[in-house]
Length: 188
Image (cartoon, rainbow, N blue to C red; front, side, top):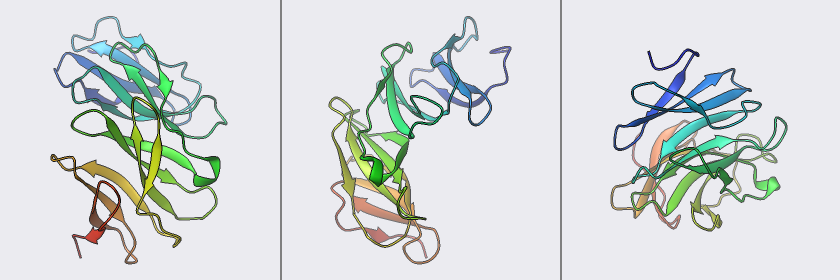
């Protein structure tokens, strides 16, 4: 038994010694950090808002997650130290661009690829890159059309990203260079 609370969305640290998991309702979720033995789980956030999409950095020294600063604030991406300390917001996306979520680390740990869903244009989302150290963000493969670019994933070489998009009218797998150029469809 790892804990005495209902747990879900477990994420194991790269070295296999820690488990990050969530507990609570969809809108009031607590993040817990526990040694793999399950002893002494530590609550990371206040549990008064959302907290999901957890991802460990490749070196296991930090983790990222989607959260909010309050129940009515905008979705954002946060990073914390592996022990749950120094939680800080790293996504700096203008309000009109939308809500940031779904963090995925680059293999070198310098960048997070995230998805940002538009608040202005229905059924529209972009992939963004966030520099973890500075929080500087940039939108990739910008488009005016109402389609969804979502769920980014890094190639091992760090030079390309895979993502899902409905650019063709249905959700398919796409890839693009890490600077947002040359988006192309892989599945049909």
